[in-house]
Length: 115
Length: 113
Image (cartoon, rainbow over all chains, first blue to last red):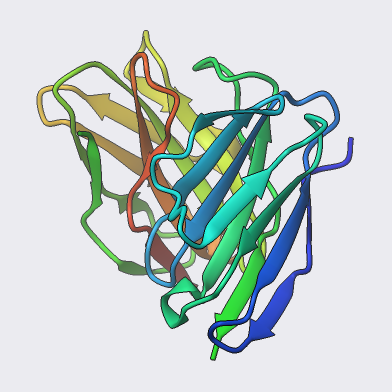
């Protein structure tokens, strides 16, 4: 079974530029998550989708971050404009559902460096 | 709001020695507890989880953890580590009724030969 796919794996941009990350979850997984992992910290949930609807985006900086999952399958996370403090690894995860017994499976992440 | 504290940012041990990675949580309601491992340049992988029942939980790769409600702890242990256990370990909590995982800051386990 294929895991969670993410691209690109690495991205270097200058501040004020825009960037987009792509995630393809495990086939059949209804729930998709985007996390931000700053160096030396644990992952922080940015947004959670259930199919193509948003369940939780309380920690998403909506003035510059946006995410969509239009067909309930793959998802895109965008930052526009980027700031230095956005340098982090962006992790995508998916689970079959959102119940407590549903395990989250993580992709390898996209490492973003903002100069 | 719930929070997770991993008491050690780095733990160096010798190969075949035992190891304990400490995790404490704070929450006013019932919680579910998880340990994830992150190998270099990879995503997180679930090691084990406590949902209910026996407080001693066994996971993959010979790891186990014990839920202690009175001490609000969920420490991870392995009796004999291997070089391949070198990784970052994250403790996480989910509050009953909520869907969000809250992670600790991680503990880097380094195994010396």
